[in-house]
Image 1 (spheres, rainbow, N blue to C red):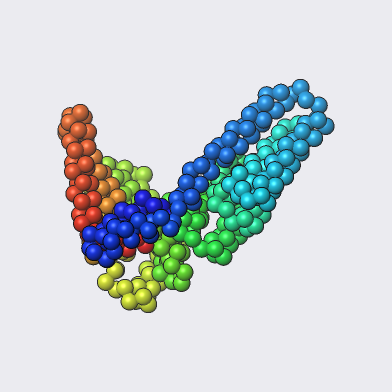
Image 2 (cartoon, one colour):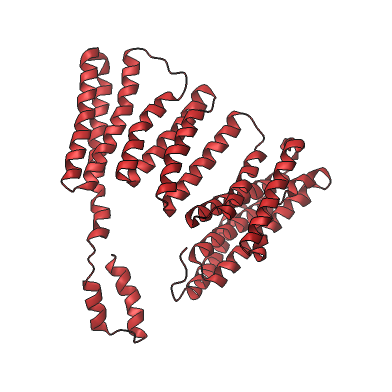
Length: 411
């Protein structure tokens, strides 16, 4: 429990004469800051372990050619086993932070050992299978200990493996993607928490984007994925999935609106290609229908403005001037972010207000940049832009504090 936060909030109760100052002191004294402090002091053994591991592995790598192959294998096994055994020992003693960090380093050493032994025996990689094997210990420890460090490591290994596979072999690893869905997706399904679910949704989105790039598909398929993700958020029952699907799907749609505005107002129309309409449009219509039905199912017809950024205005480039279509997207982004802010203020929803402020400032930034860049001196451009954004952000933040004076809804 954070005593500083309790005392700050409790002071309001004292001013409202709900409790006395003595009662506030007694309440605060019942809750120590030990857990909060451990979050910071626990970072030190993690950093120390990382530095030790880097030192050991860099020493081995720098002298790798001088070490006999059998000694190399034995040395790597001993180092890896030492990390695992020490990690288990500290966990049994109750030092979860240090034990977890040592087990984490055991996993890192396992992957490094595979790479170094591959160099020793001249093994040639043809895909990202290395990252699949490397991820398996992380999967085991994740479901055993349910620690965030293993969750983050597993995301790094699977997405990093996809990036490696894309860069080295120009291919997409379906095996890594399946492992990500089963392990990370299964974990957040069994133990749904807001941060982990958001990271899972981001991870799926990144891998879908990589698949589209590798297969050289039209990027508008990723727009369709974002719309499908948002629509899925209307149908799932678990609130954490609903929020992360809606938020990431909306960000993808908003990002495309951002891109459409910049592309269509800067004469890049020749590079703008539409996907195969025979397949794309029927899928788009199905998702639109599911989104509207989902809104109706939740009695959220008044929130149909949330679908505004998913309306395929980009098809208007075949019948209207591209500049006008681009400006239409600017208006759409202003309206969408304005509704987001207004709805957050109305519901006193801190998360929605913050999201709306970020989106609104981004729209102001790109609108100012695109309209004033060509005719304004650059020094004045940056100075005036910074001042305007600072004033606008201060105004929005002040209004947020006034609305959330009583705490508000953080969800």
